[in-house]
Image (cartoon, rainbow, N blue to C red):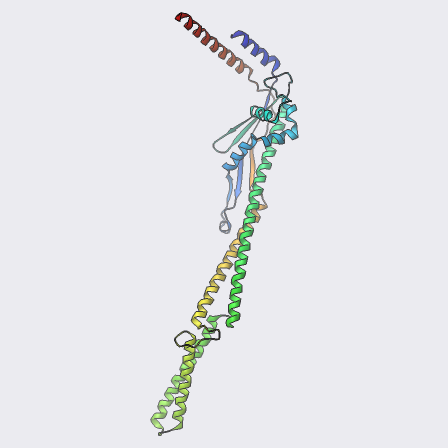
Length: 353
């Protein structure tokens, strides 16, 4: 039970099993992200950050069927892993299916994932150059996958920025059209400037009114009764007061008189200020959207995610696998334990009799 299986295992390991060479490499996924337009203007940017989610994706990708199929198309894994043909345990059966190849891949490609985002991969093969070639192909396909993820992210960011810019342009056009329509209907370019002119006219009329009243009072003190100059002064005062009342009514100070479009100046100023606020907001939104688009386009012109390989695929010089001594000792220990348990069971049953 112990010696024969142990001898068969040692014979198999040292005469049948082919030497395996291990090529190792390590990498991490790094990312460069620009935090936004305001940060750019302020000189602040977030560069070279670690991307744990991308590392998780890459960890699963290296073990996925899609990667195995791509590597198989380039290197013919059936031929690489099926040497020697007479090894039923460590070699791959060339007649196996893709599912069998995926299972065998898990045995030949080992991945260790550290908590800090570093991944180390060990690739076993029966030839040192083939082990290195498989490792280099894994690095190449992983880089392509990360670049594809970056391209998708950059494309989405640019598309969303373009949509926001189109909305901002549309809003800016509509607000400016509303302001132009207001100026066309009221025939007033700037109500504030027009009000200043009207206020100047009102002040001038009030000054003329005061001057005319003074002149009439002087005439009444010195003129005779029924002096035509007094009647003329009174008519002048009435006309000036009527003009002043009309001007005041334009400013919404009472009365029913209005400007040409039927609105007083207070209403016009309110509408004009509302339109100006809309235009100003639309302009700021447009500038912000344009800045975001410029940032997205600048980001799209460079590689925002990349594979940082801190240990390149190595060319092994000596065979490290299979661990013949370790496997032999484990086999002997397991068979010895099995024999001991069998002996204990046998004597226990015999004593019960």
